[in-house]
Length: 402
Ligand code: LLP
Image (spheres, rainbow, N blue to C red):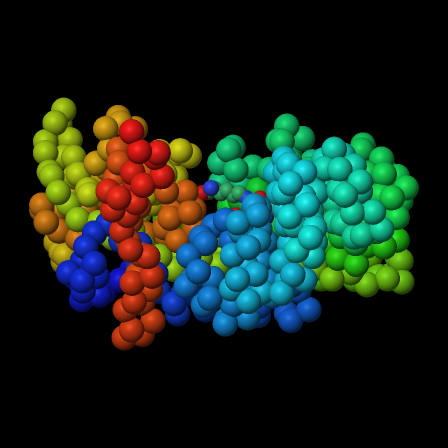
C-alpha cells in the first residue's frame, strides 16, 4: 500500500493544500501488471470505473494495458469513450436502468450486461437482432461487508437462476444473441472459493447458450487495508479459472473468453487521503485527533465500518499514542478510525489515510458545504494537480438565482 514520503506530502500540502487525494502512478501500473501476469493476455480486464473516475488515473491504467472499461451510467460510458476507449472496449452493467439509458448505451454501440427480465425485454424491443450479455445471480455471495455482497439470493442484482431460460426465450424471439454470461459476487473477497463456485454456475449456463462467447466474473478482488493483512492469491484464482474454462471446452468443444471487471484491486492501494490535524482534545478518557477531512471525502468507515490505516507523516519516529481519528463534519458518526495508534500527534501534523483510491473520491459528497478534495498524481519526480478544490461558486452555481 502506497504511503507518500514526508517530502512529497509536504510539497502537496504547500502547493495545493489539504485534504488531498494523492495517487502514486507506479502502484497503479504494478496492480495492472500483477493481474495481467496472473490471468494472461487472453483474459480481458475491464476496469470498473465507478471505483475512481479521475481521468488521469484511468489514463495511467489505460497506458498500463487494461482492455476496457466497465461502466454503470451513461456518463461513465461517455467518459470511457472520451478517454479513447472504443465502443467494443466498454461494457455497460447498469442497475435498474431507464429506457433512455438502455437507448444511450445501445446507440453508442456498447455491449450491455443486463440483470432483470424487464431490462432484457425492453432491450429486445429497442434493439432487435442485436447482442446482449445476461447478468445472473449465481447464488454465491462474498464481500468485505454485507452492504457490498452481491451474488447472494437476497441481493437486488442479477437474474434468478430460475428465470435464465425465460431470458433466453425473450432474446431468441427478438433475434438477440446472448454473447456473454455475467455475474459479480461482491466487493472485497479474499478467498478463491466463492468466485470459483460462481464461475462453475456461470459456465454451466454458457453451456446451454450456444451464442455465448465470454463469461464475465465481475470484480471484487480484495485488497489489504490492514498492515498485517496479506494479498489475495490471484494466481490461485487464475489457475482455478483456467481449469473451469478447460473443462468447458472439453465438454462442449467451444472456447470461452474470460472477462473481469476489477475496481478496488487496480486503484485502492495507489492512493492516500492526505489531511492535516486541526484539533486535538482529551474527552471521556480518550484522545480525539480531529482532521480537516471527514466522511464527505472518504465515506467507507462511516458507511460500512471499513478500516483505513492512518499514519502520521510528520512524525515518522514518534511515540505511538492510542487515539480516535475524527473528521470535521457535524455528525457523531464522522469518525475515520476509532482504534488506532498515531505517532506523537500534534496539531498541524500531516496524516495519511491509506488505501483510499477505490470508492474514496468517487463516493465524495459536498455535505456541510465543504467542497471535494484536490487530487494529485505523483509519477516519479513529477507531481501534478489532477483535480482542483471546489469553490463556493462551484457549490452554489447549480442553484437558480433567488
Ligand atoms: N463489476 C460490477 C458489476 C460491480 O458491481 C462492481 C462493484 C465491480 C465490478 C467492481 O468491484 P470491485 O473490484 O471494485 O470490488 N463502495 C464499496 C464497493 C461497491 C462495489 C460496487 N460494485 C466499497 O467502498 O467497498
